[in-house]
Length: 376
Image (cartoon, rainbow, N blue to C red; front, side, top):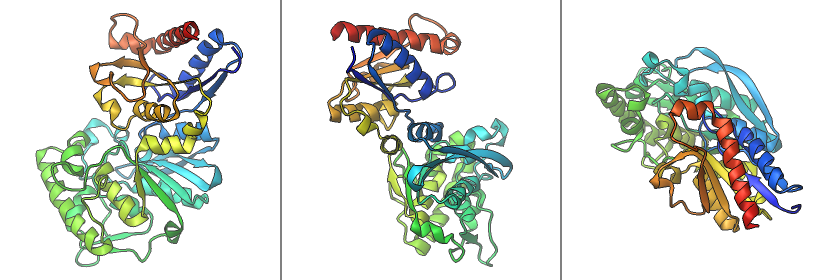
């Protein structure tokens, strides 16, 4: 069946299969039923953990591992992606992510995004003039002060003394000094990759929505929200930034800092990944696209890989099949999904599903392509 073109654009199945693993298993199943077919692998991610690796794999760039500081200021190694044509991609989770801290260390009053700013600086040092910053998975609620400090901004108290830029410092900031801000930022295009539209303040803001999952109790959330309101006033006075802007509350306010200090455009994570890896171009002439993720539910429609790929397939007129580890009724009506195929073949505990992830995915891939062969 030479002439058939299949595009594989799946997210990773967290903790079990990478995007590259799913593409390999799909290629094997496709070639078994359609000898001579063309299989195009386009690794995907939604702007969270794994985004850098997926984009570098698809674009042929370089993963660079460097020393930066974690949310508590300890030296760690973290990766960024250097892409062709002067582009780069940075994951907030890599340097400032929640998984970098033990449960007892999680307190957004103490954490900082400084390491994310260090990764951006490394990208600039490498000659990048377009930087995409993935905002998912942070352990922070510092308004982005830490990251901007790493890029030369200074956050001062009434006496002119500089703060480190943690969540606890938000309430005491009186002035922002931009005289030392890296000159290269003005010549660089920034995109902030984000799948939330929360403002900086209020019940739907950075602190009240995301603070509890980062370790803040009720009292800590109240303290951080009061501090963020002070910071918002200083930010508005210094840079004229409107803190009600959608996405300002992403990554504990790093979304606001990226927009205010870097002039970043906010863009859906999956949309930016699709643009970077060239998914829409890959879909030209495709017979079928196969996507997927670990679990599909109502949240899948809100900026996740399956919904983004399915929408692109609908626009291109390409049938889209989603292979998922599990699903519920909320995933049944996604625009552009022609069929959704769970990997699970019998009632089994979660640990068994995870331990047999590759076997179950391979079986699902074979089911998909055997059905396609019958139809074709």
